[in-house]
Length: 318
Ligand code: ADE
Ligand code: ZN
Image (cartoon, rainbow, N blue to C red):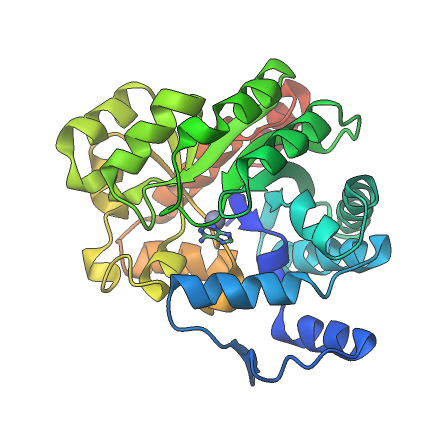
């Protein structure tokens, strides 16, 4: 089954083994945050703390090349033909690396994975909602002036409970005016109002998560009508207790209501998942057929932030 993903945070894709090796390399004690093959966290706040601590262990261009390469190779081995990764120059800056070296390193990792495994990859530059809105403008300006061919989108992650998309509207305007695709996290930890807030202020064509739209039928109708594509991350949602289990997850209901949905792993090792595991969940828990899964891959490729020639080549693989 050819697979494609639109929503994976590169810092959140580092396996516990890789993070352990990086901790050793830089002489940092991470044992309180890693237990065997698990990162230690118990709610959204402690998840973000563990994530930020692991991210701080990637400090050089080659660290990021290795991270992107190892992640893309791992999903290519599960059948992925395309991956869009969220990247965060703020995390690189905090780790002492320039945004340009960060992008160049990640781009090199994508290039290596494409050469060895044929997987295509693109980079979505994100700002971080719980850092600050002023920094977001700098990140957007960097994204807008970014000549790297793999940088094709702009978005925002981080703690949805803080502030409003209105605080970031200017940053998104800068990115949109530069021709970048727009996506943002909303409707994951916060409810339908957070989705309306995102739609009103930053006009995304896609939403990270968006699943809590299910609490508001008029909003579900709007998402379907406006063909907003949801980057759904079922394993992440259940791990973070957004829903109590896959039985309660709205993937199927949103899809049946005509919303364009895709499958994604978000931060795979944090949620004991992978892109392949998400496709398996969709089949066993949501009852999707092989044709349905293929259609989900098609939706992801149709919504991907790539040039039309690359899109056509990817769609031809289906
Ligand atoms: N950053 C990394 N993972 C995230 C998530 N699931 N929600 C918001 N921000 C994130
Ligand atoms: Zn996410």
